[in-house]
Image 1 (tube, rainbow, N blue to C red):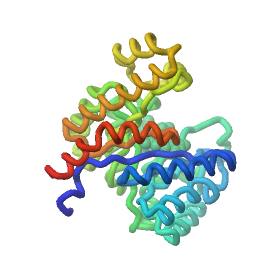
Image 2 (image 1 turned 120 degrees about the horizontal axis):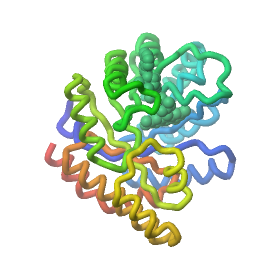
Image 3 (image 1 turned 135 degrees about the horizontal axis):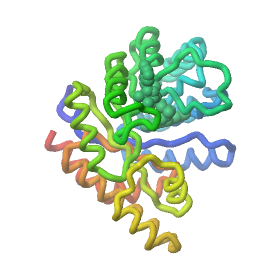
Length: 290
Ligand code: FAD
């Protein structure tokens, strides 16, 4: 490993939109994200059985070959069979996309046909055996995956993903850094010793906040709830407070030596730019001291 390879870096997640207008907006967003020199951009993939080559791979191709930024293509196993995975990996290799985030995907009721892969670890094993040159990332959950029977079983299956060939974990977003630090400790005790990138989702509008309150399994710290209560009817104040909250989390995580920050951009380059501007010197410091 060279001097700075293990230093904390900033990476982004984007999602492929459903419409042509959305896609052309995303390309502009990606052009703007390039100026922030991310270590990689990951591209999500719907768990519906749709044409991944026209969505995720198309965006990943743009990021890799037009912008020259490393890309991580998300692959949800529940949407795919072995043949499809082989074809996708072949296409990725042709396009110089050599990193994937191997996921199970959410099991929605419309997924009637059973997949060839029951868990993400099955997909990881398959990729590792058929295309060993790919760098494989996996998902992790500082507050446990909602379906996990216990914290112990969650860690057990997380280790199984690492042992199957996963080289890095990207975390679900969290709002309480303590949850992440405790998770890191549990991982260390379980011999899970690959980098864990911290997922940060800036909550900057009321719609996002309401969705979060309704569906999330994330612990909502008192100061976060107070922020929502106070600013929910003032969009600009809520945006500013939400950005400040995410920046505060990132400053703390970098100070504590996190492996990297993965920002859920929601395709919003303004948010990413504001966070980058407020934390760039901390990432530089992480590089220079590593
Ligand atoms: P797994 O690792 O397979 O775990 C799922 C559950 O099964 C866990 O409770 C685990 O403990 C348990 N388990 C694992 N192995 C076994 C076993 N052998 N026996 C019994 N139980 C087991 N979804 C999408 O559809 N598209 C995306 O692009 C996408 N991107 C994501 C990015 C990140 C960073 C994260 C954190 C999640 C993302 N998701 C995405 C959501 C993800 O697909 C869901 O959270 C899904 O429910 C679980 O996926 P997983 O890969 O973590 O599954």
